[in-house]
Structures are given as structure tokens and as C-alpha cells.
Image (tube, rainbow, N blue to C red; front, side, top):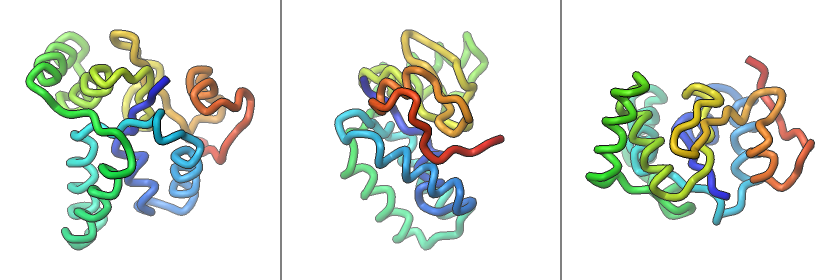
Length: 158
């Protein structure tokens, strides 16, 4: 089973926000195998934008972070077919086009999960489910992916 990482996971791992979120994001990423994690190209662009605009990192540093994620995990490209699927998803489910691109690219890459704190937890589309990895009770598919049913990593409470 594969899971796509949403932008907020990578942003938190970079230390943007607070230490608790960084610790939780890093623990989650470390628990995933390299083969089980995918980073949509859309997420790489959003990561660069957040690091430069919101976190005020120098563009060179943000580029290095973006390239490090690209080199660490499989990427899911934004193809013309992904854009068409994303537009359909956006229209039919009133989801932003950018979140729709992440979902469609993740689906195209064979992911079963999108790990995101920002998207609607539990939303399912064409067999892919959005899961918030920071809730107190983990989704069974995330437990299965991590191979530790019942084990609780550092978590965040909303």
C-alpha cells in the first residue's frame, strides 16, 4: 500500500509551525518505508511557496528542501490526464483544484491514502482515502501501512 504526503506534512517536518508538529511529522515520515510514500509534484510546488512566502526562507534554501524531498521519495507527476481528473473532482465535489490535483496525481500513482491534516479526513474518491495522521485515533489503513496496529506515534490533538 502507498500513501501520498500532503504539503502540510512536509512543511511541519521542515520545522515550520511548532516543535510538536515537527516531531509528529518526522515520526510519521520515519515510520513510512521509502517504497510506501509518494510526493505529488503539486506538493513540491506548494512546499516551495510556503517556505519562501510564509516561513520566509531564502529561495535557495527552499529549493534545496524541495529537491531533497523529490530525491527521497517517488513523485507523482501532474499530467494532462491528472489535470482532467482533478477538474472533474473539483467540479463534482467542490474541492479546490490544487487539492484535487494532489488527489488525482496520488490516485494515478497507485496510492490508497493521502496523508493530510488540511483536507477532509475520511474523504474517499476512486479508492483513495484522505487520512489525518495527527488525530488521536489513527485510521485502520494508516495502521496497516505503518505495520504497527494499535501503536500510537506522537500525535497532535486538535
